[in-house]
Length: 493
Image (cartoon, rainbow, N blue to C red; front, side, top):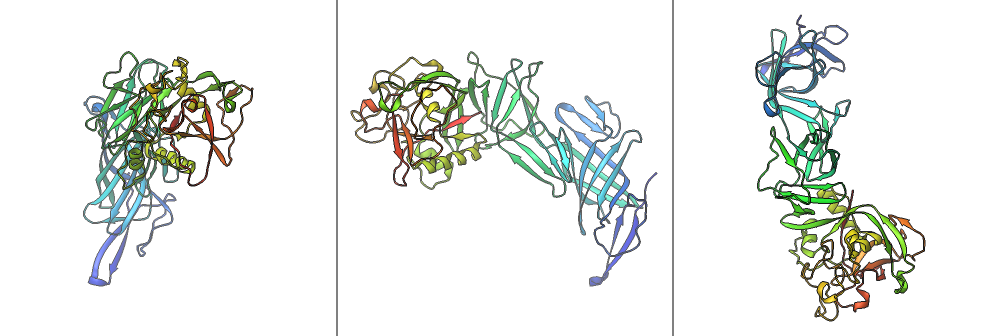
């Protein structure tokens, strides 16, 4: 049975303009007497005529009645649509819930509704939400959002009719590969909250994990490319391999589905090695370093002994030192910069890591000293070279005999076993740790002193001699405001 609205007449003295506002009966069943237009403090509940249809992904259709369309289904008991009514008297929000046993929709809302010609209405339906608190719904990368921002409602003869044609708000994508593979996915943003009272979404660009299920596919990821100018997907797979795929156009279009095959070392057509971040046309690639145990230090170097075993988790490290031009793009500097290494004080490097993290959704840091040395040695691919990538210093480094006493652009010398450039020579590099003295103890993911007047510098510089360019040589570095130094980023799982 239809519930009728109690009519409230209000006469505006200016121009003798007559409007009519309707209010459903409250959940207590009482009727509301005539009064001036003010939001009611009580919640109203009534049955409505809800012409709600949903056109989903891959031909899915959902409506109030059965159809013969492919993948068609009716609304299920408890399905909820968040409504936001807009009219000359303001905005009223509510929730419509489907009752399958009665085949009807019940509306709950605060405030009043306006009777006149059809007024506008916004409708949102969400699947796979984590939870809702008050008007705020907690979302994740698997939440499916349908909305209609051009719906309408009208009150006629005491009956409220709402019309909404819901469509997907986001594109969706899943990955195909070997069951059990775990990936960190970058460059796809998704929504984290929806506030039904304001119709506002909160989103995030933070990387997230995705696992291949037993059927050979991941769950669908619902979102959009974080970087619309340079759309891409980045995958860090099982903490061992990392790949990037750039697209010439947006392939994550609202309402459309996509499937991508997970790249492998033997088959990665259209994917490039590493996690490549593009900021306004300037790129930086992070190379995966599979974790392991190694003998850190060098008994022949006073500051690098004793040799001790260190075990590290996997991480990715910058293919090059951060260049001046990339730093300028990432921080919005008006300077164009150049391809030589950026140099600055340690606190500025830590600030840059935070800026880079917020831009990309990764977790960026300066490398720990152990991470730096393990990568410089070549990680699990190490061939035991004295310098990073060779026993011939001229192959891999700019130093006092060949640099003309100046910095040089990145990647002009040969890389090391992992594909990392300039870890010997060119710019001296700061690490996350502060100065400390080695011990004989074995360590797992060590970080040295948490504070000191001196940091740790690694790799040597363009004006250093060969003895200071080994993969194990370490120097103390004064953290004063005029002492600038190069840097290289790491990204952790």
